[in-house]
Amino acid sequence: MAIIKLIVDGGAMKPGPTIAQQLGPKGINIGKVIEDINKATIGFKGVKVPVELDVNEKTKKYEIRVSSPPVAELLKKELGLEKGSGEAGKIKIANAGIENIIGIAKTKLPNMLARDLKNAVKLVLGSCVSLGILVENKSPIEVIAEVNSGKFDNEIKQEKTEVSALKKTELAEYFAKVKAQQESRAKAEAEALAAAEAEKAAAAGTTAAAPGAPATATAGTATAPAAEATKTPAGKAPAAKAEAKKEDKKK
Image 1 (cartoon, rainbow, N blue to C red):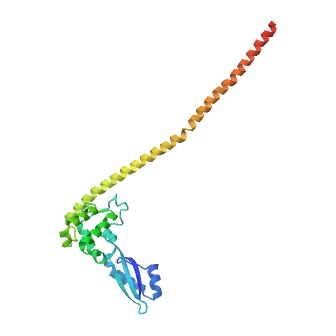
Image 2 (cartoon, rainbow, N blue to C red):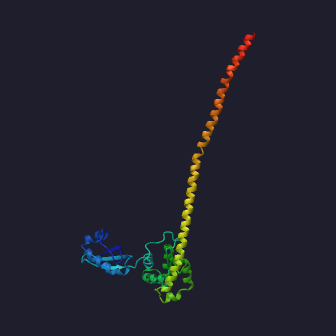
Image 3 (tube, helix red, strand yellow):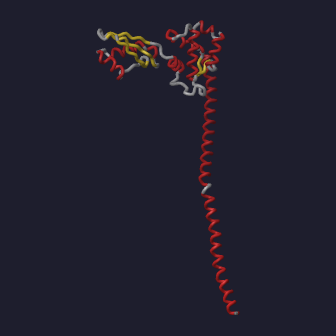
């Protein structure tokens, strides 16, 4: 038996060099394998899914085992996100309800080390921290503390996974305010940076021009006395000669 591990697009796997290199030499029908994997992962459409193929090289038969996608992938799919924040401590990209978190925790529980759904919920909330996702209008860290205090015990016990229409609206309205604040702050930071750069450039220009000015003044100052020095001896020499001639005549 050979085990082949793959990460595929749920319900949308396509032929590629990786699968061809691994299955081609074994004489396995690649088109049939892709078709079967897409059927097995259709429930995770739009998400990256870990898949294992157990291949019997003698009989050419195979078994497909699908693992649930990583928590981050499930969160992005659930909330319609393309990627995480990139600056989770500063920029928030979504606002989830506790029901969204419970739904993902239920999906991942069989593959988690968590002993029960409540602990699985806390693990999912931890992923929200790194992705920049608010939960119930708060930091996921605050929500973890609330889960520990028992605030959401009823929702977890009932395994609520659907966010009501009213709550969706409230979550969206709150996040719209957060987003507006983030955009305003980003604009102010960009303007401050531009002003600092302009000031720096102006200072650099002044510093570059300054050495030239004194040099010109010094040259001018030096030239004037030099000219005077040249004129004075030249002007006094004829007068001195005239005085000397007068003295000779008197004698």
